Image (cartoon, rainbow, N blue to C red):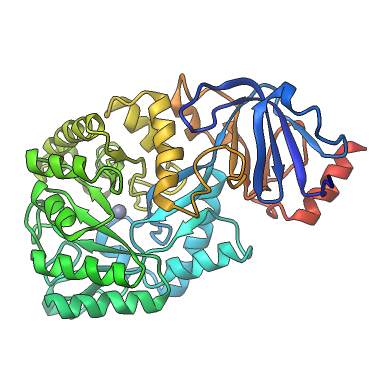
Length: 449
Ligand SMILES: [Zn+2]
């Protein structure tokens, strides 16, 4: 058996493998190339050649890299919704997105599923990440949002003649909808988000006010699936959720309000559907929104208090029905800034009553199934991508530790070390050059001397 210099052995970790099995108290992970070759208790690795470099985790918690299931790398922490479309050129937006991708990876998210992009920024960023040009999570790129006239994000008044050039493609009637989706396919995106209803902040399209007919929604899903696009929907109300499921959408954003029929349909389709409540949108607004004009009384008047209560109720019902509900918190606005992604894990524990273990399983195994990179992300198992995070703390007793970047001590994606602050192994700082293979070998040699 020949061992390449691309092997490494992580030893003495407390392994949470993301499969739902118990932790391995003293375990090792053998990485070869971009994949995991073996995971197990420390005594199962005696056959590994002594030439394979070891990194001693010192008993620290080690887990699969997480997946951010509702992300917007191209959003630049704008302080008003209108700013998203108006404030930045495509070129500047792209630079922000590259920086956001680096931040997301640094936070322990080795995969991400976009829920909408400005311009075609997602596609460029995904390609740059995949080619190794810039560090970032494995990324499912979304196209511009598709919606009808007076749909949720058609918010610029007509008399200003601004259109919605960066964020959205307006399409009415099934054939225009199909055309919009075809052009997104041409742009190279993996997914399309379609707005089926509105949002409390938008007076011209409130939650429950359906902005598409079933005919348009079904045309969208049919066209997208024909063109190999994953179809995601913005659906806050029960009627919008029912419309999405009837049309055959794959992912539902929000699902704040459910009735018995919506829940029954979700249960029926639970093996193929994913739901991202993105509740940090509301939570972040209550925590930070006053600075940008969203005082608690303003938020209450938009129905957010009721919406949070309803969402807690809906998530409990979905959880009981076995629906995969995923963390991912609409980060990228001023009140939900990039780098704070793990706050949504805290929301799952504190609002949705998930245990920390259930929350981490949702963020790893279940969200890994959503992004579906060949079934190779989300768990630490032989044959999976070596997407690995080491935590200096115990997220199973306090999930908020995941918010502290100093505690996310090691981030490995595809067997490549992007960040390592452990005393053992080569040092990498994601604010410096990412872990290119030759550089890893050089540093391993230097560390061994
Ligand atoms: Zn979103």
